[in-house]
Image (cartoon, rainbow, N blue to C red; front, top):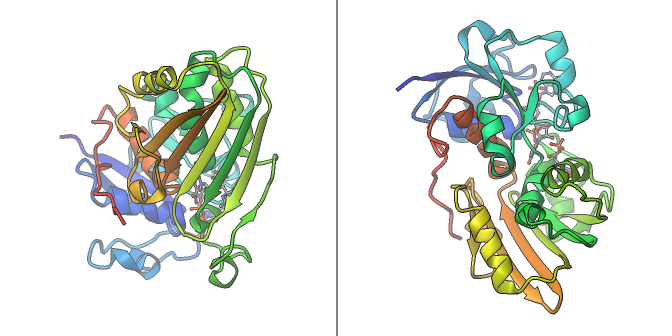
Amino acid sequence: MTNIKAGIIGGAGFTGGETLRILLHHPQVEIKFVHSRSNAGNKLYAVHADLLGETELTFTEHLHYEEVDVVILCLGHGESRVFLQNNPVPEPVKIIDLSHDFRLAENAGNFVYGLPELQRKRIKEAKAIANPGCFATCIQLGLLPLAKAGQLQEEIHISAITGSTGAGQKLQKTTGFTWRNNNISTYKAFTHQHLHEIKQSLASLQGEFQQEINFIPYRGNFTRGILASIYLNCPLSEEEVVHLYQEYYQEHPFTHVSSQPVDLKQVVNTNKCFIHVQKQGNKVLITSAIDNLAKGASGQAIQNMNLLFGLEETAGLLWKPAAF
Ligand SMILES: NC(=O)C1=CN([C@@H]2O[C@H](COP(=O)(O)OP(=O)(O)OC[C@H]3O[C@@H](n4cnc5c(N)ncnc54)[C@H](OP(=O)(O)O)[C@@H]3O)[C@@H](O)[C@H]2O)C=CC1
Ligand SMILES: CC(=O)N[C@@H](CCC(=O)OP(=O)(O)O)C(=O)O
């Protein structure tokens, strides 16, 4: 079995740490370097203490592009484009970027949007992947089957709540325990940056898609996970909608339609997305749940890496769920 040699850039952050946790146990990957400006020279477990006993690797400030087949960028908001301009990655090394810098067509260059449930074939042929945002992944997986069936004919209403790790490791007022514990709030109401990529994907399936998407994000009193509730008017029966979702996700190993309402503990610490669909009068309610750091970030990045290199799509990504 070929070993994919990987370099991680921004390895000291939340998604960098999550990517390390996954790749250290991926059967076909060898981690060749882990870049960090702030922790160069320190052991990985000096930052990600849970990795003690799992690796003796050390962070580096050097970029050993010549030693790898793929680099995974886990930099802060909007840092990737500048980083790649200053540190160009030579062919044939592939790039997987977790930031939003290359997700929209107008500034994607040769990056392919990395949502396998939308365009697995294009991902397999790509040189570079723009990994979707966390809310964007959860919400799109809740809507793609309706878009494909041309059923998004009226405005869409979304409430989605995220854990604190969605905002990165830099401590902010709204991520510290004192503020976050026993608390909840809305933020970026109607204006979240993920709306652009969500609309881009929906329009790629339902050409004339122009509907208003009313998205209210919430900050939740937990660390990992995103639960989105989505509703819109839809003339299909509940049975027809459920069948639509089951058929759409049949060939996708990580997205599952549940006959029961879903909750975060079913998906946290897995690369899965669980979806529940129900009708109430003329409204269809779709509930979608993911782990923001797994399917919403690092797990999806490795799923895309598996596709890029022709590995089993689920390689290194079948972890036991936490259950409670
Ligand atoms: N958290 C989440 O749930 C999700 C995050 N994302 C996206 O993933 C990316 C990373 O997020 P996350 O891990 O949470 O962020 P963090 O802030 O936790 O980590 C980012 C890391 O990037 C490094 N870094 C930042 N700027 C630079 C730079 N200019 N050059 C080199 N290294 C840099 C820093 O490490 P150091 O200073 O040590 O070099 C930092 O630890 C972001 O773009 C985010 O939007 C996407 C989906 C979900
Ligand atoms: C909890 C939280 O703050 N989440 C971030 C989303 C993180 C992310 O995925 O943003 P990118 O588009 O840069 O990848 C937010 O809502 O802005």
